[in-house]
Image (cartoon, rainbow, N blue to C red; front, side, top):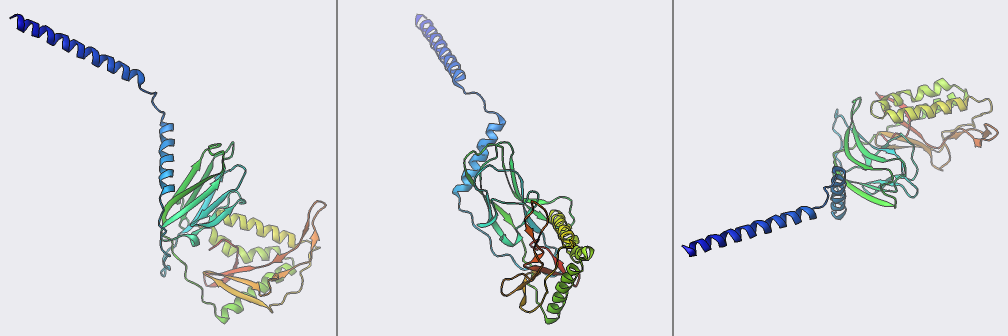
Length: 317
Protein backbone atom coordinates (compact mmCIF):
# COMPACT_ATOMS: atom_id res chain seq x y z
CA UNK A 1 0.00 0.00 0.00
CA UNK A 2 2.88 2.34 0.82
CA UNK A 3 4.41 1.45 -2.50
CA UNK A 4 1.21 2.27 -4.39
CA UNK A 5 0.81 5.51 -2.44
CA UNK A 6 4.39 6.44 -3.16
CA UNK A 7 3.89 5.61 -6.80
CA UNK A 8 0.76 7.80 -6.89
CA UNK A 9 2.60 10.73 -5.34
CA UNK A 10 5.45 10.30 -7.78
CA UNK A 11 3.00 10.35 -10.73
CA UNK A 12 1.39 13.49 -9.36
CA UNK A 13 4.78 15.15 -8.94
CA UNK A 14 5.84 14.15 -12.46
CA UNK A 15 2.51 15.34 -13.89
CA UNK A 16 2.78 18.68 -12.08
CA UNK A 17 6.35 19.07 -13.29
CA UNK A 18 5.28 18.37 -16.88
CA UNK A 19 2.37 20.79 -16.68
CA UNK A 20 4.63 23.48 -15.24
CA UNK A 21 7.27 22.87 -17.89
CA UNK A 22 4.71 22.97 -20.72
CA UNK A 23 3.17 26.14 -19.32
CA UNK A 24 6.54 27.82 -19.06
CA UNK A 25 7.38 26.77 -22.64
CA UNK A 26 4.07 28.10 -23.93
CA UNK A 27 4.65 31.38 -22.09
CA UNK A 28 8.15 31.70 -23.54
CA UNK A 29 6.81 30.94 -27.05
CA UNK A 30 4.09 33.54 -26.67
CA UNK A 31 6.58 36.14 -25.51
CA UNK A 32 8.99 35.38 -28.39
CA UNK A 33 6.29 35.43 -31.12
CA UNK A 34 6.93 38.41 -33.49
CA UNK A 35 4.35 41.06 -34.26
CA UNK A 36 1.91 40.01 -37.00
CA UNK A 37 2.59 41.50 -40.46
CA UNK A 38 0.11 43.85 -42.07
CA UNK A 39 -1.73 42.80 -45.22
CA UNK A 40 0.23 45.43 -47.15
CA UNK A 41 3.57 43.95 -46.02
CA UNK A 42 2.41 40.46 -47.00
CA UNK A 43 1.27 41.68 -50.42
CA UNK A 44 4.53 43.54 -51.06
CA UNK A 45 6.60 40.52 -50.03
CA UNK A 46 4.57 38.25 -52.28
CA UNK A 47 4.94 40.64 -55.21
CA UNK A 48 8.72 40.81 -54.66
CA UNK A 49 8.85 37.00 -54.55
CA UNK A 50 6.95 36.70 -57.84
CA UNK A 51 9.14 39.33 -59.51
CA UNK A 52 12.28 37.57 -58.32
CA UNK A 53 10.95 34.25 -59.65
CA UNK A 54 10.13 35.82 -63.02
CA UNK A 55 13.56 37.49 -63.17
CA UNK A 56 15.31 34.16 -62.58
CA UNK A 57 13.17 32.32 -65.12
CA UNK A 58 14.05 32.49 -68.80
CA UNK A 59 10.66 32.90 -70.53
CA UNK A 60 10.00 31.38 -73.91
CA UNK A 61 8.85 33.77 -76.61
CA UNK A 62 5.97 32.73 -78.80
CA UNK A 63 5.90 32.16 -82.53
CA UNK A 64 5.32 34.51 -85.43
CA UNK A 65 1.61 35.41 -85.63
CA UNK A 66 -0.49 33.98 -88.43
CA UNK A 67 -2.07 36.16 -91.10
CA UNK A 68 -5.65 37.18 -90.46
CA UNK A 69 -8.34 35.36 -92.40
CA UNK A 70 -10.96 37.13 -94.49
CA UNK A 71 -13.69 38.91 -92.47
CA UNK A 72 -11.88 38.16 -89.18
CA UNK A 73 -12.04 40.95 -86.60
CA UNK A 74 -8.50 41.75 -85.55
CA UNK A 75 -7.75 43.34 -82.15
CA UNK A 76 -5.25 46.16 -81.76
CA UNK A 77 -2.76 46.26 -78.89
CA UNK A 78 -1.55 49.41 -77.17
CA UNK A 79 1.04 50.19 -74.53
CA UNK A 80 -0.53 52.57 -71.99
CA UNK A 81 1.64 54.55 -69.56
CA UNK A 82 0.11 56.64 -66.78
CA UNK A 83 1.68 58.50 -63.89
CA UNK A 84 5.28 59.61 -63.91
CA UNK A 85 8.89 58.52 -63.42
CA UNK A 86 11.87 60.08 -61.69
CA UNK A 87 15.19 61.28 -63.12
CA UNK A 88 17.29 58.91 -65.17
CA UNK A 89 16.55 56.66 -68.11
CA UNK A 90 12.99 55.54 -68.76
CA UNK A 91 12.82 52.65 -71.16
CA UNK A 92 9.90 50.37 -72.06
CA UNK A 93 10.48 47.41 -74.37
CA UNK A 94 8.20 44.80 -75.89
CA UNK A 95 10.06 41.61 -76.76
CA UNK A 96 13.33 43.54 -76.65
CA UNK A 97 12.15 46.28 -79.03
CA UNK A 98 12.12 49.83 -77.56
CA UNK A 99 8.68 51.43 -77.54
CA UNK A 100 9.49 54.33 -75.19
CA UNK A 101 12.96 55.75 -74.71
CA UNK A 102 12.81 58.63 -72.21
CA UNK A 103 10.38 60.82 -74.18
CA UNK A 104 6.67 60.20 -74.66
CA UNK A 105 3.45 62.09 -75.29
CA UNK A 106 1.37 61.98 -72.07
CA UNK A 107 -1.99 60.35 -72.62
CA UNK A 108 -1.06 58.89 -76.02
CA UNK A 109 -0.75 55.07 -76.02
CA UNK A 110 1.66 53.36 -78.41
CA UNK A 111 0.55 50.76 -80.95
CA UNK A 112 2.46 47.50 -80.32
CA UNK A 113 0.56 44.77 -82.20
CA UNK A 114 3.36 44.50 -84.76
CA UNK A 115 5.86 43.69 -81.97
CA UNK A 116 3.90 40.86 -80.35
CA UNK A 117 4.36 37.12 -80.73
CA UNK A 118 1.68 34.46 -80.70
CA UNK A 119 2.04 32.96 -77.23
CA UNK A 120 4.74 34.15 -74.85
CA UNK A 121 5.83 37.80 -74.78
CA UNK A 122 8.01 40.02 -72.60
CA UNK A 123 7.45 43.51 -71.24
CA UNK A 124 10.68 45.15 -70.06
CA UNK A 125 10.81 48.33 -67.95
CA UNK A 126 13.76 50.43 -66.78
CA UNK A 127 12.92 53.40 -64.56
CA UNK A 128 13.23 55.31 -61.31
CA UNK A 129 10.14 56.12 -59.27
CA UNK A 130 8.91 59.69 -59.18
CA UNK A 131 8.93 61.17 -55.67
CA UNK A 132 5.26 62.13 -55.68
CA UNK A 133 3.46 60.13 -58.40
CA UNK A 134 2.99 56.40 -59.01
CA UNK A 135 3.64 54.64 -62.32
CA UNK A 136 1.11 52.48 -64.13
CA UNK A 137 1.97 50.51 -67.28
CA UNK A 138 -0.24 48.05 -69.12
CA UNK A 139 -0.80 46.51 -72.54
CA UNK A 140 -4.41 46.62 -73.66
CA UNK A 141 -6.11 44.48 -76.28
CA UNK A 142 -8.79 46.52 -78.03
CA UNK A 143 -11.60 45.59 -80.37
CA UNK A 144 -13.50 48.28 -82.32
CA UNK A 145 -16.13 50.28 -80.43
CA UNK A 146 -15.93 48.30 -77.18
CA UNK A 147 -16.50 50.13 -73.89
CA UNK A 148 -13.85 48.31 -71.87
CA UNK A 149 -10.58 46.76 -73.02
CA UNK A 150 -8.80 43.59 -72.03
CA UNK A 151 -5.47 43.92 -70.21
CA UNK A 152 -2.74 41.44 -71.12
CA UNK A 153 -0.15 42.59 -68.58
CA UNK A 154 0.14 45.37 -66.04
CA UNK A 155 2.84 46.91 -63.83
CA UNK A 156 2.49 49.32 -60.91
CA UNK A 157 5.05 51.12 -58.78
CA UNK A 158 4.20 53.46 -55.93
CA UNK A 159 5.62 56.95 -55.67
CA UNK A 160 9.19 56.87 -54.31
CA UNK A 161 9.13 53.04 -54.22
CA UNK A 162 12.22 52.55 -56.42
CA UNK A 163 14.62 55.38 -55.63
CA UNK A 164 17.47 53.80 -57.62
CA UNK A 165 17.42 52.83 -61.29
CA UNK A 166 15.46 49.58 -61.46
CA UNK A 167 14.68 46.99 -64.12
CA UNK A 168 11.60 44.79 -64.26
CA UNK A 169 10.59 42.10 -66.72
CA UNK A 170 7.10 40.65 -66.97
CA UNK A 171 5.93 37.78 -69.17
CA UNK A 172 2.47 37.64 -70.70
CA UNK A 173 0.47 35.83 -73.35
CA UNK A 174 -0.99 37.36 -76.51
CA UNK A 175 -2.55 36.09 -79.71
CA UNK A 176 -2.11 38.84 -82.33
CA UNK A 177 -2.75 38.44 -86.04
CA UNK A 178 -0.78 39.83 -88.94
CA UNK A 179 -2.59 41.97 -91.46
CA UNK A 180 -2.12 40.76 -95.04
CA UNK A 181 0.29 42.83 -97.15
CA UNK A 182 -1.20 45.20 -99.69
CA UNK A 183 -0.87 44.43 -103.36
CA UNK A 184 -0.34 47.73 -105.18
CA UNK A 185 -1.40 47.95 -108.81
CA UNK A 186 -0.67 50.70 -111.32
CA UNK A 187 -4.24 51.89 -110.86
CA UNK A 188 -3.62 52.16 -107.10
CA UNK A 189 -0.40 54.11 -107.67
CA UNK A 190 -2.21 56.59 -109.92
CA UNK A 191 -4.99 57.06 -107.33
CA UNK A 192 -2.47 57.59 -104.51
CA UNK A 193 -0.47 60.16 -106.48
CA UNK A 194 -3.70 61.98 -107.36
CA UNK A 195 -4.53 62.07 -103.63
CA UNK A 196 -1.11 63.57 -102.86
CA UNK A 197 -1.62 66.14 -105.61
CA UNK A 198 -4.99 67.09 -104.09
CA UNK A 199 -3.35 67.51 -100.69
CA UNK A 200 -0.74 69.79 -102.21
CA UNK A 201 -3.38 71.76 -104.12
CA UNK A 202 -5.41 72.40 -100.94
CA UNK A 203 -2.30 73.76 -99.25
CA UNK A 204 -1.56 76.03 -102.22
CA UNK A 205 -5.14 77.37 -102.14
CA UNK A 206 -4.99 77.67 -98.33
CA UNK A 207 -8.07 75.48 -98.10
CA UNK A 208 -7.93 74.36 -94.46
CA UNK A 209 -11.31 72.62 -94.62
CA UNK A 210 -10.18 70.72 -97.70
CA UNK A 211 -7.03 69.56 -95.88
CA UNK A 212 -9.07 68.28 -92.94
CA UNK A 213 -11.52 66.49 -95.25
CA UNK A 214 -8.70 64.42 -96.75
CA UNK A 215 -7.84 62.97 -93.32
CA UNK A 216 -11.37 62.68 -91.89
CA UNK A 217 -12.09 59.07 -93.00
CA UNK A 218 -8.87 57.81 -91.39
CA UNK A 219 -9.55 59.78 -88.20
CA UNK A 220 -13.08 58.35 -88.00
CA UNK A 221 -11.76 54.81 -88.46
CA UNK A 222 -9.10 55.28 -85.78
CA UNK A 223 -11.62 56.55 -83.21
CA UNK A 224 -13.22 53.10 -83.02
CA UNK A 225 -10.10 51.58 -81.47
CA UNK A 226 -7.67 54.44 -80.82
CA UNK A 227 -9.61 57.54 -79.73
CA UNK A 228 -6.53 59.06 -78.08
CA UNK A 229 -4.57 58.90 -81.34
CA UNK A 230 -7.50 60.22 -83.38
CA UNK A 231 -7.88 63.23 -81.08
CA UNK A 232 -4.15 63.92 -81.12
CA UNK A 233 -3.97 63.57 -84.90
CA UNK A 234 -6.97 65.78 -85.50
CA UNK A 235 -5.48 68.51 -83.32
CA UNK A 236 -2.18 68.29 -85.21
CA UNK A 237 -3.89 68.48 -88.61
CA UNK A 238 -5.97 71.48 -87.54
CA UNK A 239 -2.76 73.23 -86.51
CA UNK A 240 -1.28 72.43 -89.91
CA UNK A 241 -4.37 73.67 -91.75
CA UNK A 242 -4.38 76.92 -89.74
CA UNK A 243 -0.66 77.48 -90.22
CA UNK A 244 -0.89 76.82 -93.97
CA UNK A 245 -3.54 79.55 -94.27
CA UNK A 246 -1.02 82.20 -93.26
CA UNK A 247 -0.54 84.75 -96.10
CA UNK A 248 3.22 84.43 -95.62
CA UNK A 249 3.21 80.71 -96.50
CA UNK A 250 3.99 79.95 -100.14
CA UNK A 251 4.18 76.32 -101.28
CA UNK A 252 7.16 75.45 -103.46
CA UNK A 253 6.47 73.76 -106.83
CA UNK A 254 5.65 70.04 -106.62
CA UNK A 255 6.65 67.29 -109.04
CA UNK A 256 5.93 63.58 -108.77
CA UNK A 257 9.28 62.76 -110.40
CA UNK A 258 11.40 60.75 -108.00
CA UNK A 259 8.41 59.89 -105.77
CA UNK A 260 8.04 56.24 -104.76
CA UNK A 261 5.16 54.34 -103.12
CA UNK A 262 6.23 51.72 -100.56
CA UNK A 263 3.65 49.28 -99.09
CA UNK A 264 3.79 48.37 -95.39
CA UNK A 265 0.96 46.00 -94.51
CA UNK A 266 -2.25 48.06 -94.79
CA UNK A 267 -0.52 51.43 -95.20
CA UNK A 268 1.61 52.81 -98.02
CA UNK A 269 4.34 55.42 -97.65
CA UNK A 270 4.78 58.09 -100.31
CA UNK A 271 8.31 59.47 -100.23
CA UNK A 272 11.15 60.64 -102.42
CA UNK A 273 13.98 58.31 -103.32
CA UNK A 274 16.59 60.99 -102.50
CA UNK A 275 15.25 61.49 -98.96
CA UNK A 276 14.01 65.03 -99.59
CA UNK A 277 10.44 66.08 -98.59
CA UNK A 278 7.62 65.16 -100.94
CA UNK A 279 6.75 68.85 -100.92
CA UNK A 280 7.36 71.85 -98.67
CA UNK A 281 6.85 75.59 -98.37
CA UNK A 282 9.01 78.60 -97.73
CA UNK A 283 10.25 79.17 -94.20
CA UNK A 284 8.71 81.84 -91.99
CA UNK A 285 8.96 83.09 -88.41
CA UNK A 286 5.53 82.99 -86.81
CA UNK A 287 6.28 85.25 -83.83
CA UNK A 288 8.90 87.23 -81.94
CA UNK A 289 9.95 84.31 -79.75
CA UNK A 290 9.06 81.59 -82.26
CA UNK A 291 11.55 79.72 -84.37
CA UNK A 292 11.43 79.33 -88.12
CA UNK A 293 8.63 77.09 -89.41
CA UNK A 294 7.45 75.69 -92.71
CA UNK A 295 4.98 73.21 -94.17
CA UNK A 296 6.97 70.08 -94.96
CA UNK A 297 5.81 66.57 -95.85
CA UNK A 298 8.75 64.18 -95.58
CA UNK A 299 6.52 61.11 -95.87
CA UNK A 300 2.82 60.97 -96.71
CA UNK A 301 0.81 57.95 -95.58
CA UNK A 302 -2.25 56.54 -97.32
CA UNK A 303 -4.50 53.54 -96.81
CA UNK A 304 -7.56 52.08 -98.47
CA UNK A 305 -10.74 52.69 -96.45
CA UNK A 306 -14.00 51.26 -97.75
CA UNK A 307 -12.47 50.77 -101.18
CA UNK A 308 -10.98 54.25 -101.57
CA UNK A 309 -7.48 55.55 -100.96
CA UNK A 310 -7.37 58.09 -98.13
CA UNK A 311 -4.64 60.04 -96.40
CA UNK A 312 -3.87 58.78 -92.92
CA UNK A 313 -1.60 59.51 -89.97
CA UNK A 314 1.14 57.35 -88.37
CA UNK A 315 -1.21 55.43 -86.06
CA UNK A 316 0.73 52.23 -86.76
CA UNK A 317 -2.17 50.32 -88.28
